[in-house]
Image (cartoon, rainbow, N blue to C red; front, side, top):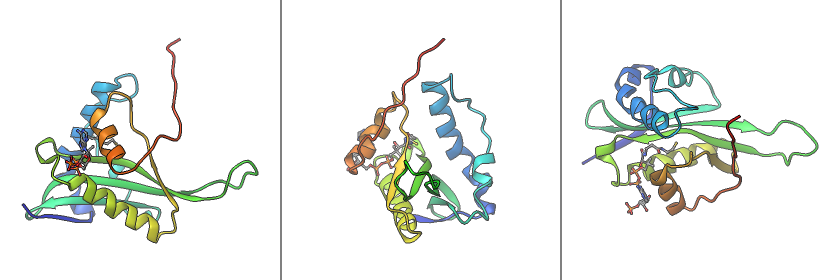
Amino acid sequence: MRIRVRTATRSDLPLLAPVCQTLDRLHARIHPDFFRASGTLQELSHTFGQPNQTLLVAELDEKRMVGLIRTTLSDTPPRPVLAPARRAKIEELVILPRFRRRGIGRQLLTAAASWAKAAGASQLILTVWTNNRAAEGFYCSLGYRPISQALAKNL
Ligand SMILES: CC(C)(COP(=O)(O)OP(=O)(O)OC[C@H]1O[C@@H](n2cnc3c(N)ncnc32)[C@H](O)[C@@H]1OP(=O)(O)O)[C@@H](O)C(=O)NCCC(=O)NCCS
């Protein structure tokens, strides 16, 4: 199996719909109070033409998409209490279920980290929602560690 990781183009968008839906559905299942399985490609379509964002895809054969990662860069706002830094955030990372545990997630994350480093970022950050054990195992195995914990209580 030969996987190619490359920057997405607008014409890839329709081919990315099943990949996007996989992540939407997962989030809607584990946190229905926050997410809906909308099937929209809106978030991804906003990436193009934005210098602070990148969308990388994992392509199997010609134009068969099996995964994606979207990353954004941001600088801390100039506030005295904040240590100035440029960080990259993983907004979405997902691999189609039948292509998991073959190193594709790692390949995409490594490529996104290279892009971020070249753009001057000193840190990569991301959110893993609770009850997503696969993502926890994945990031933990690659050296990512928790830096905060979000709490919520229904009112
Ligand atoms: C998390 C995800 C992206 C991992 O992608 P992947 O291509 O399967 O990961 P890789 O094959 O590169 O795994 C690299 C290492 O991470 C760890 N890992 C991956 N999946 C794991 C799991 N389900 N449980 C525990 N560890 C896991 C393993 O150490 C693995 O190495 P190994 O297979 O040699 O043991 C994939 O499971 C996925 O798409 N999940 C649904 C979407 C999601 O949760 N995205 C992240 C939150 S935004």
